[in-house]
Image (tube, rainbow, N blue to C red; front, side):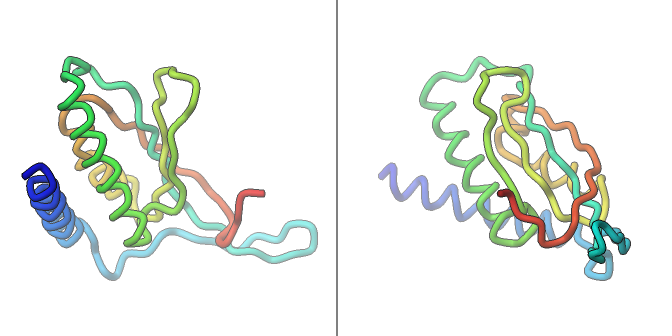
Length: 143
């Protein structure tokens, strides 16, 4: 019964995400870029958006509710990653106010903020978002 409920819930989340993406995504909008030369190499710089996931005001869920929301949160972020919206993602490890962050490849800050705000943990008030623009060379990798 739990498995069926979980799959049903994940299906509803993916349908909701598809609807959110359809409403918010302008197929003609692309992230801002410019060409930059560094160390004799030309590269394309792109504006990304770092979404900081910070401790929210509603931390009163019981353990079962917290685990359910965590599963939904990870599923939601996974869908955004598969769609190419999130390009880098992970939790922080110090237990501080910033619980994790994601790097979004969207055309606008408002789009990144809207998508991040649709996260089940944010909707529940367990997390809140802060979004900042960030320039990075396209194709950069962490070494």
